[in-house]
Image 1 (cartoon, rainbow, N blue to C red):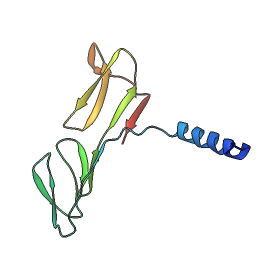
Image 2: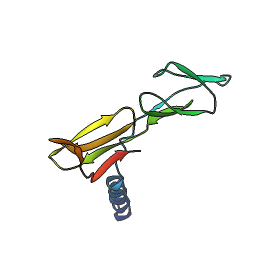
Image 3: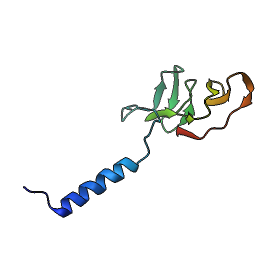
Length: 113
């Protein structure tokens, strides 16, 4: 079968749309729950939660009984003289000058939540 102009056009359009989609770096973990379950288990904190609830665990994940996803975004573009440090208490990344932790740096791009 010889490709027609219409098929070629659709193929080019599909490739263009795919290339324009932003990459997703948010990490999610799907969990299966039995139909008769009344609670689900969070392995990060070793705690049980009622079906239908949502919570943030100690691994900085926003969870429901169906899935847990990163509760933070990850900076991807910031000045070269800065460093990226994760704050586990606040569940966020801080970007500051390499030689002065008290001086924050601008963030130009990030991925995730």
